[in-house]
Image (cartoon, rainbow over all chains, first blue to last red; front, top):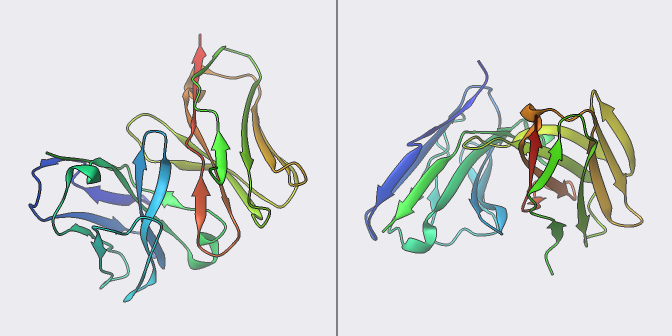
Length: 115
Length: 110
């Protein structure tokens, strides 16, 4: 089954404790992206990657890091989480020719709470 | 002013009603227009995708784009309780950057 898998789905952590949210897709998509979804603000892009070893900032990259060492994986790293990073996070992927026209496949989301 | 405006709802309708969901936008460079559906505790899934102006129909769903008014719509005919979800509009200039609306929550009661 074609899917984007995120882990963990739910996480409660404390300020400053480094964490990684994993994302993996099995569709051989070149393009992958991370979004956060907050009430009243909608989905905002954090980082995206056009291919292995190619990443770029989205609209809200502060406090986040990413890496793309393999085509299928695109982990999101919070080096020192803060309460304002409490949010619902989505990973998405697409074929490179479809990414800029919005045909994204989303994971099921990771709800992160930072105390 | 946000680039994309969308009424958050909730919009409550009885089963069988015609539903109209709308978004307005300010960036005249947007060329690609999408509607995503998001069920509770799930990720968004692409419902409809339209390039430039005009209508597109897929079963009970019709997407409409009016670039002159900077206004897009999604119509759902014969709405079903299973259509209850949050509907997100999204748009793009075509260079990897999608801008999403905040979503409209739709409730279809039996």
